[in-house]
Each structure stands twice: as C-alpha cells, then as structure tokens.
Length: 121
Image 1 (spheres, rainbow, N blue to C red):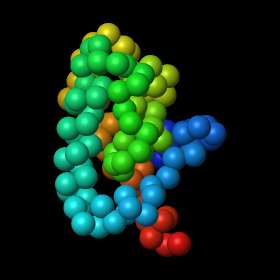
Image 2 (image 1 turned 180 degrees about the horizontal axis):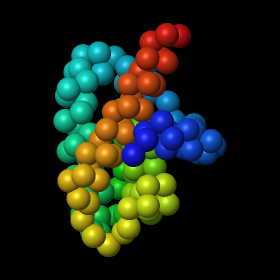
Image 3 (image 1 turned 90 degrees about the vertical axis):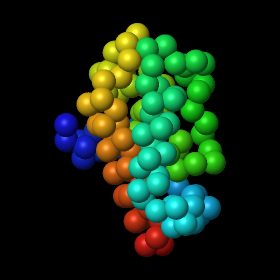
C-alpha cells in the first residue's frame, strides 16, 4: 500500500484533516520516544479495533490525550466503520497481522509527519 496516497486522500477530508498533535503530545513523544509510541499504537490497534466486533464500536477511541488516539482519527483507523470506508477492511472479522502492521505503519507515519510539522513552527 502506498501510504502517501491514503494520507493525501485523508487530508482532503475536512474532518480527518482537522486533527493535529498538541504541544503536550509533542512533549510526550519527546519524553517517551517513537519506539514507545509505536508499541502504544500496536496495543491500541489490538484493543480498540482488532476484534471482529469491538466493544462500543464507533465510540471506543477517545479524541484527545494521546498522540495515537489523534492519529487513529486522522487516519480513519478509529472504528471498524472508518476502517471499512477508508481502508476497505471489512467489519465482522478480526484484523489480520498484515492489516495491523499496515495500520500501525500508517499511524506512525502520520505522527512523524505531524511531529516534524509542529516542531518546525
């Protein structure tokens, strides 16, 4: 999958493009490092959207407090409906390891780009 293609599509959505990392999230990344954020992304993909029928699907991913939560919304990875719409990953079955890797890589790419953009300002 070409990550730049999907990020460009997502950036054209008024809702998806409204997400950005806040200063406290940049500090959090500075303190924890990208390896830790990557582990958090893996854990959150598994717990929030990895199952066939996630608990409270559509409302399970907060919209604040952690860079991965923000990235999940910005990347259309926040619920199974968004996964189906943006990434053509069908609902009603567990995510495969390949799909999880794709989503984590996409989230981390978005976070790194947003991080660099925020650090430059």
